[in-house]
Length: 331
Image (cartoon, rainbow, N blue to C red):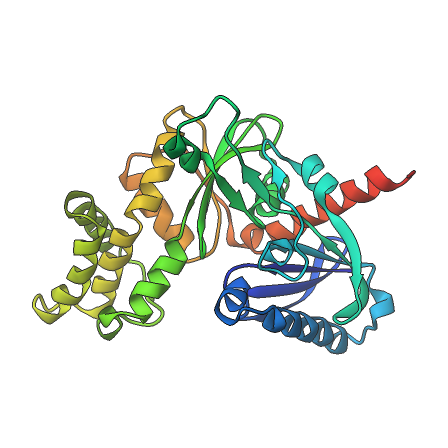
């Protein structure tokens, strides 16, 4: 048996597996933004210990029953509990396994923990313009394992584009060898949460923001922002209720459609070559992104089923671990 832990910006998910069979799952609303807010990794370590303890006690297990804990995501980032360098793209399972580390952290558990690095994009030596460099610089922590798992579970191969919305949206280009060659990042989920929870808009929008999806209002907000800008569009989410008499869900869909303008627009050009776009990530953003991408004329969309999206990062992380063991077997 092994435990997979996937920590992101806002949530930590731990799952127990027997081979590829999911046995038990638990979650904490803790992520690396806690480190950013508190200036310490104490919350991450505490939640990690709690998750491991819950999994063991709830399943009648001891630490001796667990072969390894496989960690993907932000715990190996500079704001995590075990920072290791990102690998440089082009990067696939092989590169991720070479950069990974296996260690023991006794203050958390005596079970070995396998930390998988993120992936970063760097400009080549020919790029000298600072703006061009800024456009190319990018990184991810965890989405690489998510796409490895999606490709395996869905039998995908060849050149593809992938969009993985969540707290952040990662739009990736994957080459014919299954390696990540480029990425673009948007703060879609964080942006929605920040603007809906910490501004005057909180009074006008429901919680959670998207309680039901209304495609017409999503597209309407998107189109309004395209013409008038995101900032003016956001305040309209209050005014359509205060003056226009809209209900909360109509206003929320208009707001989300508007706020996602840039995240959607950064994905669309990558699909113009005819490559399929694999749409993963979390709900309801996965469905919302699909509606807005189709409204922009993107046709060849492969939507990842929820049962695949749920475990993809864990399966991808296990693939990296297996490659690591294989590479180090005779050393």
